[in-house]
Image 1 (cartoon, rainbow, N blue to C red):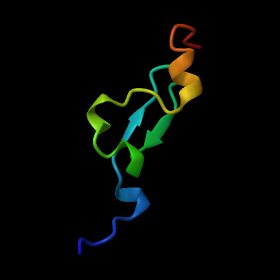
Image 2 (image 1 turned 90 degrees about the vertical axis):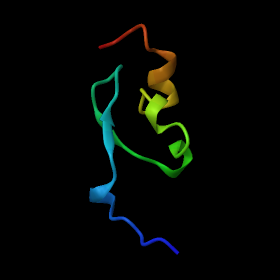
Image 3 (image 1 turned 180 degrees about the vertical axis):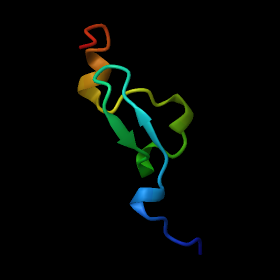
Length: 50
C-alpha cells in the first residue's frame, strides 16, 4: 500500500478566475492536468475575472 502524502507535499495550481492557489484533490486525480478552476463558482464565472 502506498504511503500517505502530507498536505504540504501535494501539487498546487492557481485559479484562472480568482487567482488564489488551490491544492490537488482526490476527486481530480484523473483530470489534474485539465483542472483550471478552484471551484464550480469560479468555473461558471470564468468570463468575469476579477
